[in-house]
Image (tube, rainbow over all chains, first blue to last red; front, side, top):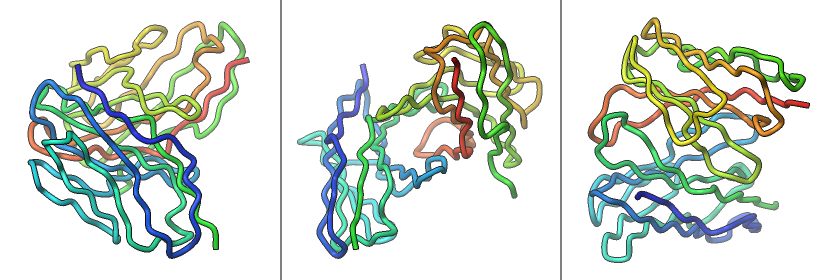
Length: 113
Length: 114
């Protein structure tokens, strides 16, 4: 089956620190990969995505590279801000009739001033 | 464009009561989904729909029912609420299957069953 494993949080960083949130996956097909972000009290928003091996998704200073050889899609940001404090979810989608996503457990990021 | 809207935002139910969580989208999306998010956990799919009149079970459908009479609306029904259904419920929609089309999420409904 399909599954997504993320590093457990919370991750606590000081402002301007470098961020890495690890994500690895198993999939029965050839997946598209996503990072969603959930700010406090809100629903999930798409942060970035990648559809094929070696693609790099990027948005708002965040990046993630689709690594087929290591089945990974780690999220990185060079300099985090307090406003980046949120829960980050890695997800995958293989071609299926319902366009369904499989989510990881989420990683809470807390950035201190 | 309101996107995906959900009502109510919060609800407290007693064991055995029933309720309907409302979800609507104004983006003309064919696909709609209901997820639950338990504390510290990822999202689990309850039910989904690929179009009006078509629904199917997800990973955790027991204790829930859905209907999809219109493209816009996808209500989730809880019958005989149980404490195990205490969770945050998210509705989502997407434009179509295939390709990397993203899902758009509503703000969630926080449900407590006591």
